[in-house]
Image 1 (cartoon, rainbow, N blue to C red):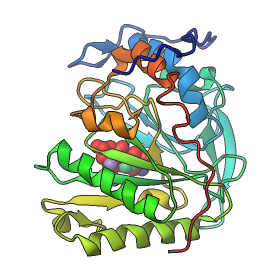
Image 2 (image 1 turned 90 degrees about the vertical axis):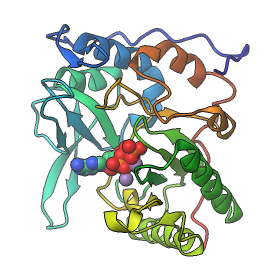
Image 3 (image 1 turned 60 degrees about the vertical axis):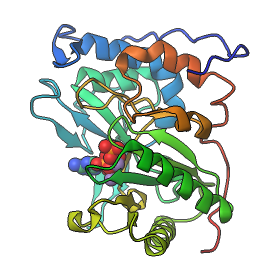
Image 4 (image 1 turned 90 degrees about the horizontal axis):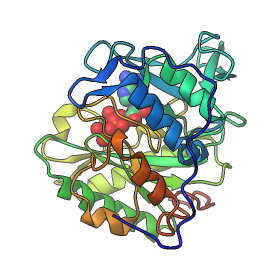
Length: 301
Ligand code: ATP
Ligand code: MN
Ligand code: MN
């Protein structure tokens, strides 16, 4: 792992006045991770997670009885999470308005954990301006049977194609099966423009290398290929956020990495909730500084 002698001191875990109940409840039976362990993980990584999650509408994966029991995806709520979890009213397709959730501090994250949340997924836009996305995500979803090496090669190739049209991208291990390419944007273009760009980009790649890639959502067309899921880039869609614990065996986490690190990593589940110290050290290292921080406009495509 990357150790940087110029790294800044490791921040203290966030102090929180959110009370976590049932700390001993086992949330990940396979990894023996309890609700208390999960809360401690999120308190520890809150300082490195907040730059990515704060002030963004979020959806939660809640598994109140643990990841092996029933989990559900939650987009809005009128107030049962308490004061630390904020609301932003967002217009729905039918013209009505719904209260979406966002957090702006560690207490907000922990209040969600107290309510049984394992995963946090974010909009590609800020709560203060939900109509102009500040990032685009290409979610690389490999068909079963493909190797992580295939995913890494795909990520590298997409990075190069994006660079060719002037866009800088950053890789993130999802903690699941794949990698996300995060493309930060200056928040100027609106959703239809960003979605259309992402779709045309994904289709162009799939057309030029149809044996490796598909931009088609249908499972049947994915055989042996990597699905370039551009649909994260439509209004209302979310993507898993950096440092989120996944509700999967072993309590893996989503982790931003550098392109050179990615070459030496053999699994999208390289780190898990027991690795908070390592993740904090890495996040504050010189190698990771600037990850996800480019201000760029959508080019013509
Ligand atoms: P993996 O690497 O295993 O694919 P992932 O986070 O990319 O992990 P996907 O299934 O590709 O998982 O989903 C991409 C994104 O779509 C998720 O991160 C999440 O934000 C969103 N998503 C997934 N399932 C749902 C759902 N049931 N409802 C709403 N959004 C979802
Ligand atoms: Mn995916
Ligand atoms: Mn996907």
